[in-house]
Length: 437
Image 1: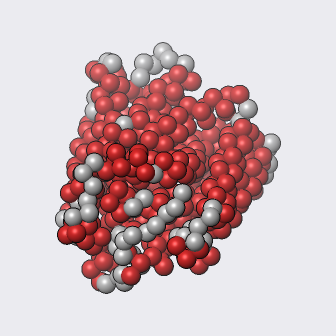
Image 2: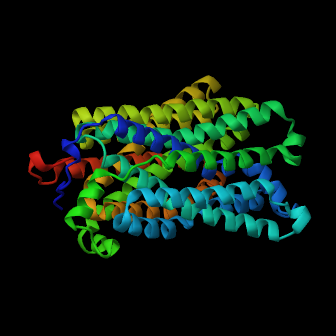
Image 3: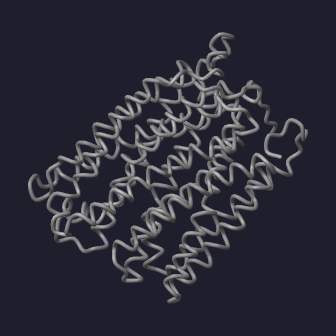
């Protein structure tokens, strides 16, 4: 596999307009990802309100997480369609479409009648809402990664993508903060009765803000050049499948790593920790917030180090640290370790979860500019639909069998990142043309 970078992003410097554009992109991504992710923070309440009460806890949880997973299964459809038009007509237009598809469903959840009121229509509508959100988010993050990669100086690409990815993780942090205050201000009964709706209605408001912010975005210079030079591809996805098979494989593997960092470690483990440690919900929310911040910081630090020491070497280093820290964290958690030590290792595992930043950093370098959006979006969304969609079911199943296997699973994902890094490092490139060294 020979990777060549044929755009001029590496020659560009950021002016004030670029910085403003990148800031608005990152902030908009934070708000949109909040809309998509807030569902998981109230999974237990939704499970109780939107499914039959005679289900045992396992099947009730499985149904709820299944509805959550439906959003991931719908991502490839939205990602492929939006990426096609993103490569054909421009990156900016797809930003506006994705946010519109996210705002309406999020607000709808906030006013949706429960199972007690409308019966099986409630879980059916809930499932459709998640599908629409999945279609929206399918084009959002790949588009944002491409957008930023085509604005910044190549020497600072790791840092720039780290900022963006950290801000998207910040959407989860925003969800945690809102959840924290909901739990502080309302009783459990009040949350079940009405307060759980507030974060979803608030998400609709955030969506309107995102739409306003994205009005000020400008098309990327790279796309304008391709448009002017008439180097756009008629059917980008066909070109991707024809010329970038190894790129698709590498992107798929790195997306698998990313799903472990976000879905398993950040989103699912706090609920499991609460059940195991029997600690107050507020404590779990606080430690989750700290860990999310740690992941965002890890994304930025990993990007800075990648800019300085090379993508491949830094990816391998973070892979080793991610595997080791998770094994220690899970060993402490399931062997009755000291609670403070468990929390410390959880936060450290989150920091090395910054390895997820190598997913976009590698992908934007693998695909040529005129198929970059389609190649990245196809690989990322297909892998996320598979590994992200199955992750909740896998975690619940492993937890019932042997909880320590969740730790082994995350350690294995760290090993995958190491293998990818070694491949990129050892592959026979001309060093001056290899963006990974």
